[in-house]
Length: 203
Image 1 (cartoon, helix red, strand yellow):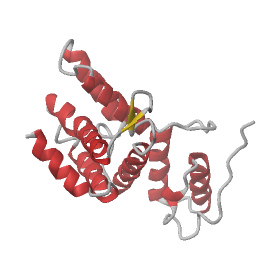
Image 2 (cartoon, helix red, strand yellow; image 1 turned 135 degrees about the vertical axis):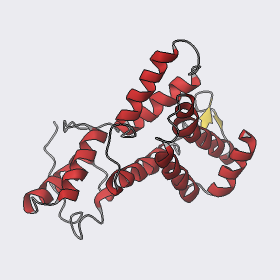
Image 3 (tube, helix red, strand yellow; image 1 turned 45 degrees about the horizontal axis):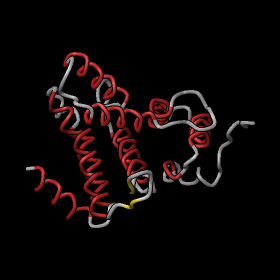
Image 4 (cartoon, rainbow, N blue to C red; image 1 turned 90 degrees about the vertical axis):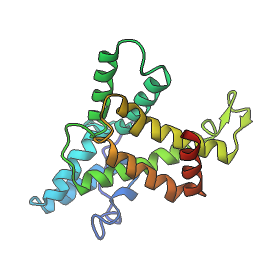
């Protein structure tokens, strides 16, 4: 049985300081709506609600998937499956659709969107620490930290720079690219060295 989420009073202290620390999305949304009930003129929190529902959908199901992460992976899969071959017009349309889902196209740029992108970047990096991601051959062979770090760097670059550049959309993706690279450098051990090594190898 799925019970309706209720606001967490502890998480609402010093609002919105702990906003992204609320990992359950339904609880995060409940806190946000509760705050808006008490502060109906808060334009920032109305915008937060817009972005939350764009990223996670409007329906409060038990496990709300991250639509930003879904679109990131869809672009990555397309890029790895010969993104530049076949029907170029269809591939550009597909890329633009996923970039809209990622709030890169057709969305107002503001600090709250940048905060959402930063949180998405951290959640993506967190997902890369799973056993399945850090291994090959059905988890039987672990990958070295360097191999994993290079894989993450390449994925970020593929999705936020390489694929968009093919359709002259690299400038539209620049901010997301910079935010994801900054998160990588900050959160991956020896991240700056790995990123610079990836760039040197790419040239």
